[in-house]
Length: 224
Image 1 (tube, rainbow, N blue to C red):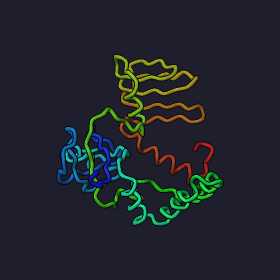
Image 2 (cartoon, one colour):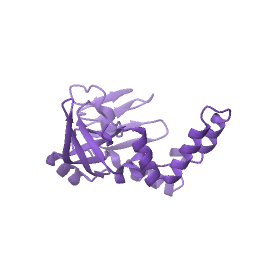
Image 3 (cartoon, rainbow, N blue to C red):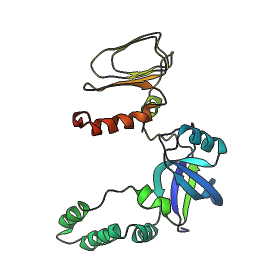
Image 4 (cartoon, rainbow, N blue to C red):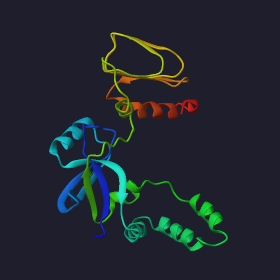
């Protein structure tokens, strides 16, 4: 109602490096018991040391990518920051209800440049607010996040698929049809997709992007 662009910020449970962070600024209001803060800045996927400092400060939330706003306010930001996209939306809007509405939508939408709402609007938007919440949210953007969704055994292992473990602890095993056997390992992520096998330390799975970049550089598109 006040015209803020509102985002829901997730209270961090750990210094995750795979999420974006939102820094809380001055308090704006309390709505139904939830404090609302002005957003000072967005920070995209910090390194571990920075993430630790952010979480310890108590001033940061994870960026959930969930937003609440009035249509007129977000359109103002589209017109200011993404004017080409705003014009495309106007063309679609003008065609709605007409005989060529579907054709217009398909034609215009195919021409829209790929851009996230975070980069395209929110990082430089005016009057952005955050409501910190603790709602059991997970982005499921990493294998550690996936592991959090399944129960662990008495040794802390999370297993999906055929597996036999000897002296195996705190390991995520995500397999398919082949049996995965582990001996004397701890704190690993093992993912078998049939055509590729990933083995890495827990906490370093975000570095898989380096593998993806190597595959692209080497032209090994069959694995992407």
